[in-house]
Image (cartoon, one colour):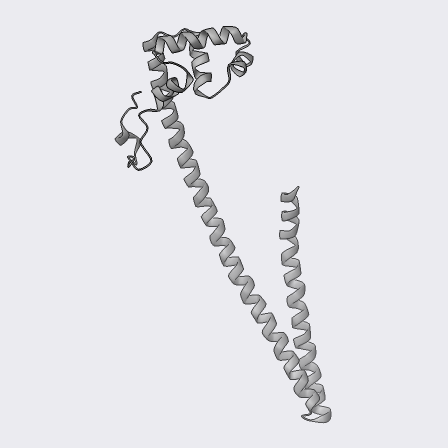
Length: 194
């Protein structure tokens, strides 16, 4: 709904601009015509000076608003182009992240092979690494929580770790510290080894 309201507001803005400019133009045209008529009839009077000032202010406001709208349009185009660049950067980052995650997932699966985990143990280990509770893993895999707990114990035993935290640490211990420079290209980082 907010998007529909924004679209309607965007459609109304040009109409408002046209009406406002038309209003100022009418003041300028009608005021100028009145000044010419008054000059013919009365000559220069304080009333005419007041009308000249009114016409000048209306003309100045019309020019000022027109300039402001042009600048706003230029800024809107710049922001739209910047948004397109940001979306492209985001898409690139997501692609790189997806490739990195696939590589990380493949490394995890190779380690599961080395530990000789069964299919059910692998599913449990993946759930544990994602931070799922034993109950959530059981519901996801349509197994009992007790069975999932037994699979988790088997995973910990085969991996040689004491629990979920050590299992996660096994795979994440190779991540750089906060103050460690990280290679900017995936190929420079080499393959992750847990």
